[in-house]
Image (cartoon, rainbow, N blue to C red; front, side, top):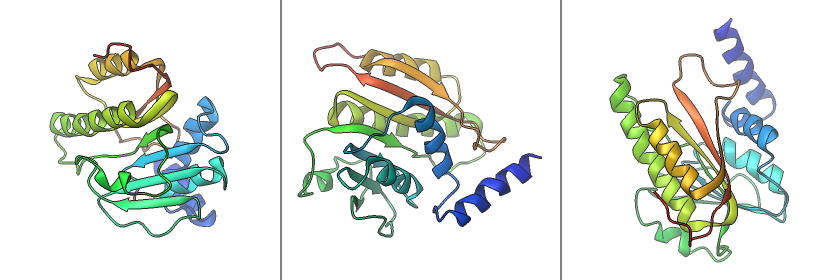
Length: 202
């Protein structure tokens, strides 16, 4: 049954011209929390192969702007999407070189994940490192009142991470979308209403 459901999402992605089944994860998150709106400015970290870019571009519309960053080159997505080939672990100077760069983003997305080793704790801690990078970028580049979505592998430190997100966002939730593979340990942390810089962070 699980395999058939996975095949369903993969087949649906192909039929509907999405680059990966992960598009439906973002759709389900957004359908629940109403994060993406017309004219928004979006930063997508770990954007390859581009399925989240596709969803974000559709939902923010032609007056919105989506900037995607990944270590791997990404094929063009839409007129309102700019992609950068760079490492999110760096200082992201490439982002500052973009002509249309907004001063702040309305939402930061991260579907970043480490290359898995099969060792649960090791994979969890690598995932934690990437989640921390995404959270720090969201704090640095997100507007007051903005949102974030971060993928993380479940493990012993996840509650501490959620506590940190709560120190920076007024409303914090965790969601495992229906489209997530049964064997996957991933979960998505959603932060809404980013606090002001005057608020102390953990």
